[in-house]
Length: 447
Image (cartoon, rainbow, N blue to C red; front, top):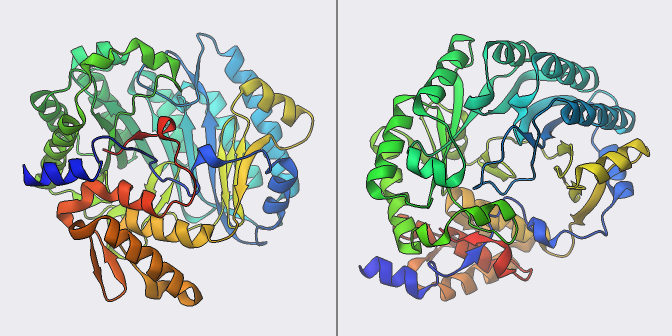
């Protein structure tokens, strides 16, 4: 009860806080970054270097009501085929702009539903990318998998394309909750997808599950997590459901009065967290879990855990290029985001220019604050001594944070530490280092 009171006093149950997959966060991107800037940043990639690539497929067979991603429903293959033509043209543009010898170290296909693509489409897209960016030795290729949209031929096509990791969306196995969030996906279908992937030689499996869903109770989340554990994923993302119907209109179909309270959300998270750790998973950051042999757990142990738009990652590349509508690229110089409207994205590419609609060029102390926030989100501690000439500025920022959160944080030998008992506050602590105005209505609950 004392801990709950402390969290309540510090605003945990009321605050709307970014997930800090970038800094500044995407709502602060502006149209001052456009196609010319994107082109210049791509040209500045070191020749012979390695980059990461994100491919966005913004189509689903059906739209899940809980989802706030940039997607559109389609019952036919025609819009998908047209989109791929545009994507191929964007890849050609990238090929003309990249310096020579650049290789691909990481690739992720997300959406939407990448497995909506037919086997031939998968092969064509993978071949197109390989012609521009061949894989570097030891490269990782991950794909988001909808168990309702995967079969043997698609799995075979993905494996032939080089897929090394599959990321399976689960959300919740309870049929009543699934009906309320518009996501019909039985445990049996999910287990079948896992078996099919493993039989094809894909042994690195991720899974996403949500807490804070309507009608979710301790008993129901215990049942769903137990079923997920029976499938033995290598890593799990335990995300809090973000109810933002003003941003994602489909979420208005979800009854807000059926959502758990913030205190109940925290309890649901704690139940799931304990189940994962009791089963031998390592806690990774604020909401991921991984078996000790997984590369994410190893990255955390080595102090090399990173944060990107997919969440936690062990990707050490400085450059991530996003292709497709709404995709975000990250460069050492800043961020660039493609137009989220598929039609406007396609128009720009047809006109022979990158479809960058907005972004952010790093300025002032952005990089310092970004580094502090990333270490807080990844390691729950940060040392001023790691910032060289900016150590004094970092030290001052940490001192004010320690004062703002009084006994909940530890400031020791120039190191700010979030102790285990206070880690529910991590995003609130990160927000303390955010020098941009936080737009309350545009972010998810702090838990």
